[in-house]
Length: 538
Image (cartoon, rainbow, N blue to C red; front, side, top):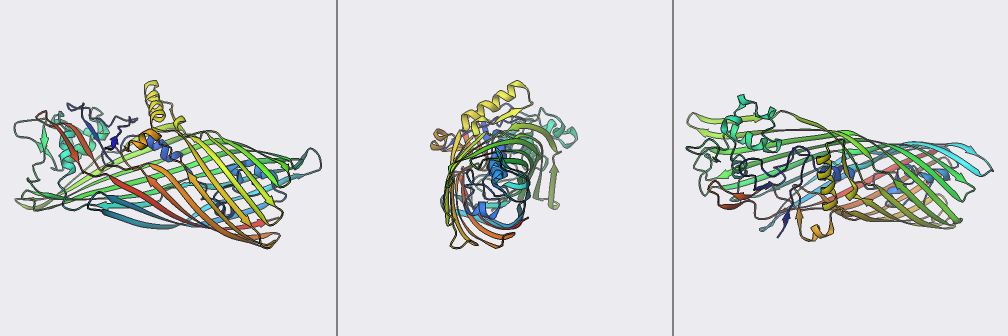
């Protein structure tokens, strides 16, 4: 049996705060207003496929390699290998396909999303060439895309027995109906938690109503017994994490290379969930309902990267880099609306209700990362490179909040997540001095606690687990000053299972019930990234 895990949020918990406080309510549609450690996890993950074409074609295995613009975001010691000034521009085409499947009988939905992107742009400036202890020094500035959130997914069911109205009715149990009226301003009163706003919308649009003779027990008076439900969910995500890198690197006697990067991140994430239900053979009033939720997170982050590369012999390079946590500040804005279509005595009527914007600022830190790499050069004809990366997701922390909330987030991070083991391998072959062929492979370990993953943990939405990528590319240097590189990367990401909504607890009579769909939803993402890099050396 899957383990459903309720994560404490910075606004409220996902357990109800009404008379049914011993119940558990969750699912993707029920806790979007809360800021949780899964938000921190989502904004912390990064791959090395959104970079220069040469680096992407070798799957980002560049911890021990250098003289590439991507060195600034991987190992800034690689800047010390530059002997000239260079400008690079890396436009890209990104395609994402989300595939969601549900239970038995097998149902699925998928959507492709293709768009143009600027993965990388920057320059390096060779400041010094000499014959002393410091052989050369290089300064660099670049923009690198670290993560891309643009995707769409959908999943639809037919002829089901469950409705979100049943969960809303249980969620509102114990709240006097007078608090839910529009003129009582329920969204300005935090005795009604934001994760209960969906239930308030349901009451205001007649999806649920009080039971006869009660002022705080609810049910659906617009759905008849035995009606079948056709649920449909569409998710639209947009955004990215981009980083502006200010870097410096030095070369010490062509043996030791040292570097430092100050990274300034630009973060934007937007998600919209559109959930609707239609009904078959409903003898009562409800024809259709739509529940629309919107979330935006935007902010900035700052980190530091320290690196070293050592060449014990000219052909062998050993690299080490440490990425400090990124200290992130984000503003999180949430709102929701609901619409119902009812067949009343006067004809068809549309009912609509809207929440206020829920706006909070949050500060947290992402994981510390340790990167190691080794590479070997076979004369001027080939390079093979391997990287190992460890990222401590259990070290994510909420900051600038009261001590009790910081402790709750700390405990969630330690219980739910762990350190990952990521591996990247790259190969470059040069049949001629001007032409290069490249290939790579990368594997990114899941950051979810292994024990919980084996138990089948379910978060309140899809959380990225493990992923892998396969890459390839080619490059051609037209002159000593002009080069053009191409890369193609395919990446598959597996996500944790999730429910749309569920309720596990007592009903109005005190009997234990479980509401929600019988099967969980499984999601996988396939991404295709095609990058071209124009390089100009001076």
